[in-house]
Image 1 (cartoon, rainbow, N blue to C red):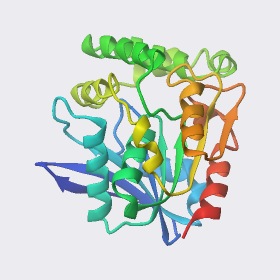
Image 2: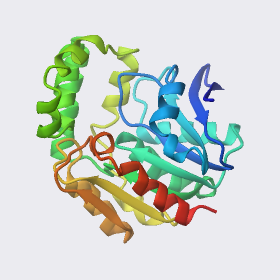
Image 3: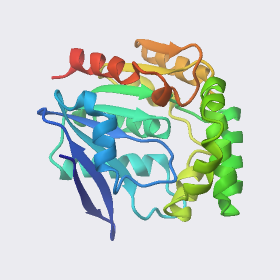
Image 4: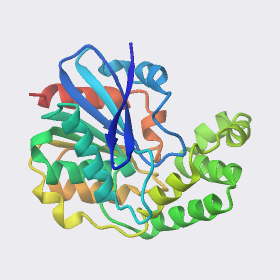
Length: 265
């Protein structure tokens, strides 16, 4: 049974969902999204049921209302605050895309909260490819054009094989999926325009595993590889997949489970 809850902070709140029978906490930090965590408890508990026997899984959202100029470090502080309020420490932490940056900062600033870390399709500093994607998405968001935003997101993230297989469904999905909060999405997206945490990476002392796709058109394979090289940590890259490797690769979550199982305290 999935539980949905919220942690009050700064006259707003941080939503989370929790599921799983294990005692060890596993924190999932999703990437940039037009949707909120709230209301997805059942779906997420099914999608990530592979973790349910070993862990108590928490998926933590960004604050419901973000202040203009909010940085990724601010988001990391919010997530750390939520973890502390929920009584969570020494957790396995799994961050995807923008969530990987948030996870890096938590592991560096709040080492007592993190026992092991997985960085999925990650990035630690701005690069031209990511910046170009972000600027396109911001342009669509400012025009409130959810169809163009969704279409570009799909084509940027998924493999050619996936796009061909689902070519009839993607236009429908692009029309139906509308942002829950345009302003929150815009502020969250703007935080990706200029950031650099590369020099702080080697302050992370817990075990780390990097996983991504070699055809990543959003953060790039080079971004994942430079993190692994800096941290001298294991890395696995899917040759034929891109930024949505976490959605396309059938063994993606199994690889993460194997790493966390071997490094959980």
